[in-house]
Length: 314
Image (cartoon, rainbow, N blue to C red; front, side, top):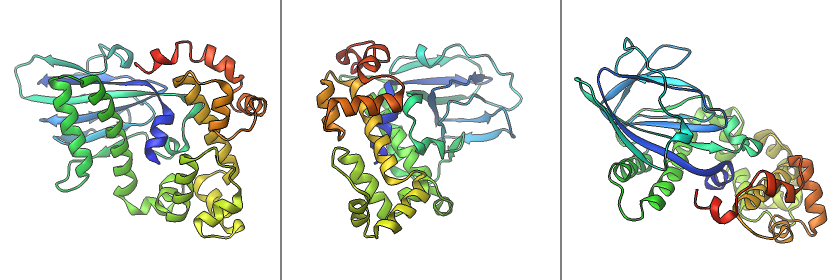
């Protein structure tokens, strides 16, 4: 289900760079609205310097994730002057590599980001803090560590098929970061929100089924049966955990999925309507306009100005 959410939110292709810094160094990474960014310490150490709070020490294997593109700085020492940014997310390629000379010890960072479609941000992102820090701990988050190692190696020395490999690994990295955060502290699942929804086997099973088959003519009763609960009990539980009634979430997911299909495919409107559960193009167009503010045809022309064949290359 997390992979569905990632596919829904991300637009275009992610960007990444492997940078070797030699002390002294300090770099500011500005706030980038409509994005999510990450930093991984591949080798050496450093300090995270956020706008608020004390500097945080970083060591090899640490992963930082900024779900809403908040600004921050990283340096070899809290006392090192911070330089202004020299590039932005759009300035990066799918993968870049650079080395910043200096007389001191080396630190290697893998940084990057994802453009997020702010018109269809999944509620899962709203439940995340501004910063997720996953310290390196022996024996924990083994899949995440494996993805980091593979990604770092591929960005450092691209080989045949690197475009496909790096793009896939960046999506895996985001998936493993979210999975690690949601499973790191069981107490999170006691306070509601998507952490609790994903941890609840009955509600999670229904969400997974809806994501897999949005075209099915779902009813609250059928969802409740899938969860093994009465209609009323299921509706209360779903609404409490997810933050929306079952059918409201179903509609939102269908129309968000339709927006992705309009962006990424050349399918006819009636075909997209059928794929997301609408029996007529007319009813689909009305529902889409209520949710997104424009008709689907206009959305495709104005929001997605490039042919799908070009979008899929990015």
